[in-house]
Image 1 (cartoon, one colour):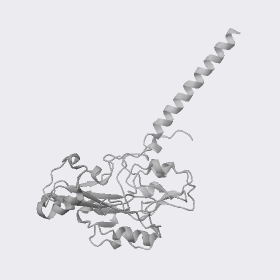
Image 2 (cartoon, rainbow, N blue to C red):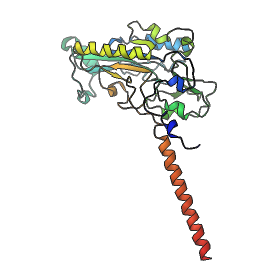
Image 3 (cartoon, helix red, strand yellow):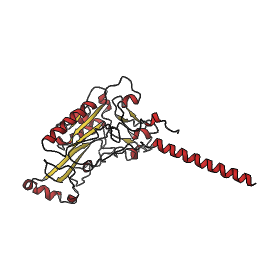
Length: 310
């Protein structure tokens, strides 16, 4: 593998206004995406069910975790949409930005729920997580077979018939989204219902969401709509409301699936400052090349010195 040029390195990080065009798609439609407004998520899991039904995803264990109503636990090869239930002893409104919740770890949430009607200070944060369809997708960069590809809609899709199960993309994802299916070895993740998009239909999860917590559409329009929603919440006293993954200037160039959160990203199990893991590949190859040249130069010098002594 040769060293990457400066032009090529620009594609690994930074602002990228046209991901589909960069991937070779001409006359493509606008970039499509998800905006998940967690402030109106009711935790019904209709999105999880719709995703599984449309994509024929196997059941994911049917395990009772005891973690509130969250029995899917996280995204994986058999869970492409995951609704998290986070229980906090904290008032629903008038929340202070940056509040520390570490003092509440290990609390008896069942006992808290029993007292919630009297105290009124227990809240649930519910959020439907999904693949972020990153602008700079490290999974694409490391896939050796081309199984992962960028669609004309700007989304990232796995072609399971091409995947060889190498698993390189699994640690490359800064969000821990991609997973290998047990007994199969290949990787699976959300496709944003690529087959439906081609027919002009919205993804199954967004179609099934009864509160419009999951919104689908042109990414630029969704970002504008999300900014207005944050302002509405701030005016209503919910000052902790913030967008996650909507900034094209962040470490992954912005996400095709972004969120409105009511607390810090870590509370939802999201990394606070994700960075595309392949960002430093060009400099790594340059340093490796420099080290190799230095080694070869040293070996050549030793060989010449040895010959002179003879």
